[in-house]
Length: 278
Image 1: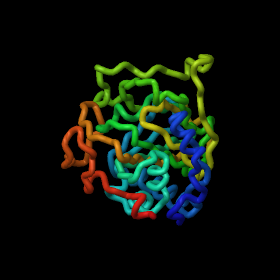
Image 2: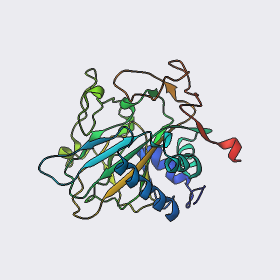
Image 3: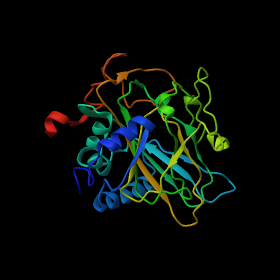
């Protein structure tokens, strides 16, 4: 299992991430990691463990499953966080001296799942502020437009917008009334001012996005192909703790104060450091 990216993250990749707020990186994780985490994801879903969300509709056979903080109780997810190339990739894209771990999230859409991933961006969900925060969404199965591949609005991380968080099951715990709803950009595909980005992905590819880049996904239209994505979130040098309301509930209260760099090693462990790597 590779500890460093199977393909290098280039300066062009970093420039694309900074310009568009998202970049697709091919083949960063070897087959051993993909197989291990694919199987671990299915086992975790079937176990019923964790903070699971399951969206099912009475008129469909599929389901949209998600879960968070798996690595706090599962050795496979912990190993992927600590031993795979993912933290190094995060620090490289952020141009950060270090990468601290925020949390992991699992997304599984079964075949013939109608439920979409609504258009949103991530930072309003999270108790952070700063530019050095990144999500790395790793494909563990093929992910295409048909099987609910992710789609992004290029440059939307620079809009200065903060849209209301929304979950697939419309959890009111995130429905901040002080923020405007995110538009349904699916209805604006003909808008010449918007640039939509998406990629057909194979297992081991990943998309990396800034937490203010607007994105979404359709349902899984395949009759046979399950879609599994594993997303890990990291932050770097300029991140600050911002415990605003209507955000993800932390496993426990951090020791850092609002406005400080969140360097609580129990909750936000340091996974990769440039000086140590050198």
